Image (cartoon, rainbow, N blue to C red; front, top):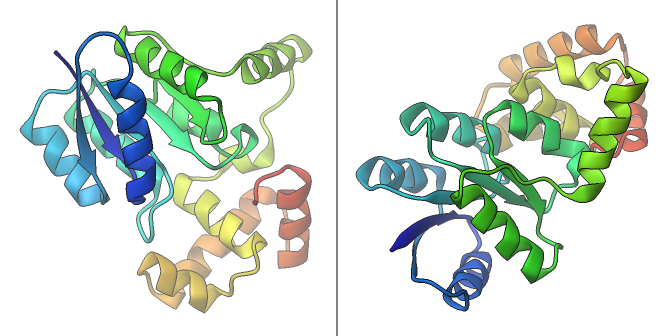
Length: 210
């Protein structure tokens, strides 16, 4: 029997993925985790054929969870299922070790296809993303400035661009105001920017904020 671990902090999403897999031919057993800590604990405690992982959690970055999963189970295929667009996260999740990326507004049949593909050891990305990556390679497109940021710097950049103050970001990420200020200074230097307005304009233009 195949085993899939579904990691999402919304019960309705976990139920939806579970029902989808229950409808598939062949026996698939599903485990559910609603927090990063529970996901890591379950990944250590049992063997899984795949993980379906959201990357939006309060406090802890989903990219951090992905990297920790790959550290404890290097061969475990992880399919990222998220509300964020491909422009925002696809490159980063593949760099972090994901086997696939799909958005929550994808058709059910496409999600089923993606899960089965990563379970079989393949990689999944949408036709649109695959085409974009090929075009970028053919054109020799340089990496955009935001790809030089660490995952935490990228997270702070998106929160600043969404209108959050440094204090609000610190509270949201359970970090000190000083730490967030340091992240801001580093990302501004890497991006070659001086103001939040410049950063916000860049993020909106490049579809990095919802």
